[in-house]
Length: 295
Ligand SMILES: [Zn+2]
Image (cartoon, rainbow, N blue to C red; front, top):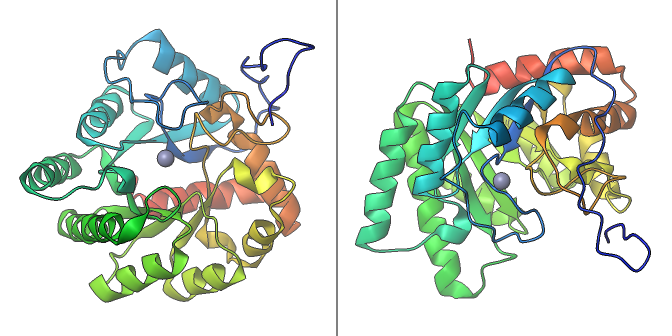
């Protein structure tokens, strides 16, 4: 649901800035190149100037409320390349590169794209290979699933060869994601972006030291199972993210998301865990530094 003005179009104005966090944190997953939050198929805008007003405004608005570090995530070869260019231009922005599971194909063109991803993953400003994984929500049929699994396995191998964290997209596919990870042998650092599991997946993550990154979905009314998982995980295995421009935290659902809205999710996480915001922010930042091997 989105807010509507009386008889008017939905309210698409940016939500107001939240109260700044007392200690800096990082947005572990955002897409500054995706514009147009209503259409999940919105194409990355790789024509955006990495030093231009659109992206600089988002980085500065985030820094102003304590979201000091951003991980910008590519979903195909052009947007992954753009992410590395953005990270090269801004000291507090790091890049993740991959072919999104919904982009998984097969054949020579895919092999070529994967070689391109591996070359980008080796760049110093790249901290993760992702988002990669399995999406059983948007991809149907055995052929689509097979292509995704192959692509996921290829990305796991790239993360291991380049020494990067693995950033996982898991949509309605918890069991299969864990199966493939354990079958391939996971890299040292694994993060489940937009963690969407319950207590079972939380337990599996805790057992293997995998990090769960919580998005604005944690603030949604119907997210009881997610909050249970967030309460049960060890504090040092938690991260927060926006997945901007999507998944805007409550009470601004339906309006565009951006990294400056991370504080809503941080405060929701502190409430769920009964911890104070200062201490949680400190742990989130050190987990981010460890997970993405930031100096
Ligand atoms: Zn994403």
